[in-house]
Length: 126
Image 1 (cartoon, rainbow, N blue to C red):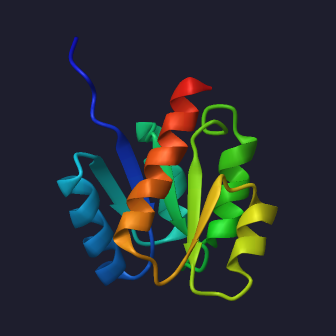
Image 2: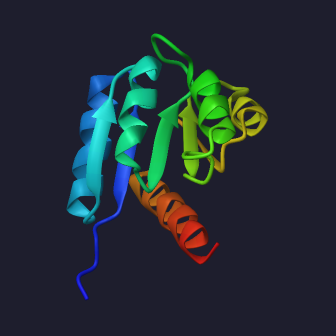
């Protein structure tokens, strides 16, 4: 049986962050989709990614607004959302938005990979 690569949607308005995260995740064997604003996330989730890595502060819709929408919609509510931010209250905002996890920027890429792996293993067994 062929195993499908897990797909991760990365949403951040900082292209350098998107580029570095995409490179790390590609190297780790993930398929990576990416967008640079909150508005584009809702279109991109039609591809049914296995996880959404979502910045809290973005152009268009904020990550908080996007996460709340994802968790309300039937076809996306079970997709794990890992939010990230440099804001001091980022973890609280992520929790209030219904995110499945949170990373404070700047974060170590090993911590990112570990968080993604944990969320994907939970969603597979659920």
